[in-house]
Amino acid sequence: MAAPAPSVTVWLASGLMVAAAAMVAAAATQPVTHTVTIELMQFNPAALSVKPGERVVWVNKDLFPHTVTANDKRFDSGAIAANGSWSYIAGKKGEYAYSCTFHPTMHGKLTAQ
Image (tube, rainbow, N blue to C red; front, top):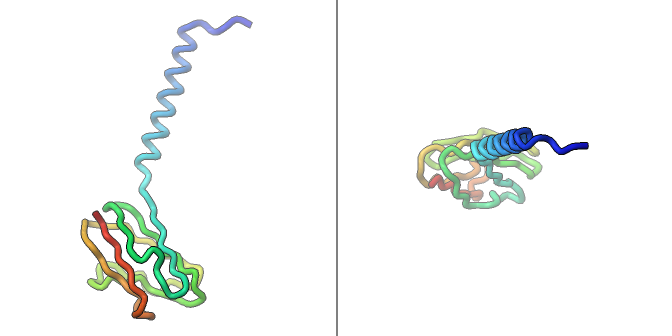
């Protein structure tokens, strides 16, 4: 079988490069998601730094509900049931201490930078 004409080969290669560039661009625009695990009466990690616009998901692996409540009331998850989760998209830059309203010894800090 004869090889394709050079113009067809160039056209195919160009199309593949354009498709690859589009996939990379789409992946770059997907928001970043961070996970904080709630387990053994702790937030893990207890301190997390993110960029504004990034999503943080808290996953409750304890057998009872918890909350993720900012000390300044900027965000409040309400009760997150066992095996449940809650997410928040970081807004403007700043440091936001938070705790569980049901268990005041549980503390965390979200930093948007």
